Image (cartoon, rainbow over all chains, first blue to last red; front, side, top):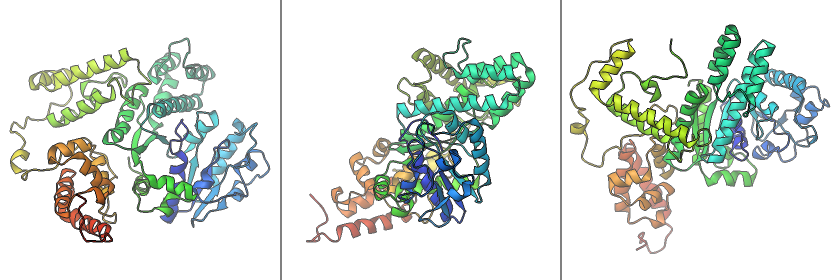
Length: 292
Length: 210
């Protein structure tokens, strides 16, 4: 669960999706990867986590499973991100690969990964490694802007990993710089460049583009117009990025969410019948059903 | 071969080749809004000139597709399967619709998985959820029902103290429910029960405020 901008509800959604999935009888581990601004433990009612992902990142604990703490919610465990090493919060590329593999091996049915704000390479990798990639936004210009920025970074990163030839990868990296001198502005521009360099890589590019399928969640909607934003962003993704995003759903603005965070407990426990809780359950249901 | 980045007029408006005039109209409104001057969805990606260029293309697409003759010519130029046979007759809805207020034409369709279930309470929030899911603004419901939008908001927020006597509220809820495609017979009794429960503790037994 990522979003680009801070404060748009990534952690809120991660925590409460985790709760819904656990309540549905699944074994869930919620992982806080926001090593510079850990909050997930608070949303889940674990006030002082005794272990942290940073123990794994720093090599103090080689077994990720042992970092998964019990939460007040049966079936839901938490890998917190407190007491991090702020000088080098995120793992380097090599350690990151190990972490992503370890996440896959966690003994559970679902891993919910809460990403931090920004488009740090590590954050983008967490986002891309999921079977589902959720992008959360507010119906506000700043948030939509950062969400596109994040998707753009994720798209190019995804391509960089997928390409096999060094010179093609180099061209993709060049395109990541928004002020690149080759005038590559959109994935379409990049595709034309790649095709010209190597048709085989061009085909791989198109294939990868099809698999890149972020799912949009608009949080704190207040009006029917806000609800429509998800459709418009999907449209822009298709036209501008050539990417098939999915509009997964939206969550209504609801004071119950604030109530829950002040109580430092999951919304689904504090106010299970609230509007926001109902919307979160709906999003979870769509994810469980697996359809698009 | 078709280029993914150069859509035809149908793709531009995100509709199928056999889209009805109503679908065309709805699609045009939504896509046009995405590229409006103050659009949240596009302002950070496109300069004003870019957005204007897209709007122009959308307008042209709509112009062609909304004219049956020009649309037929365009379809022929695309090749592929022939267009669906013209139904010719106007939609029978107009005749069959119950006396006002009827359901408001949803501005969002095909959005799956956000329907309410029977377990969810029939409360103000549920009315709003149904409205949001159809992409309908409060003002549109006010227009159709002739109910003051402030009262409609009070219904959604369940600000029972600010609503008039129960008999009026019953009418409001009935009309609102129809607008958003809910069955008044299911919505109204539990909603009125919530209203009664909320007003009960008030001494004197006069629920109205004014």
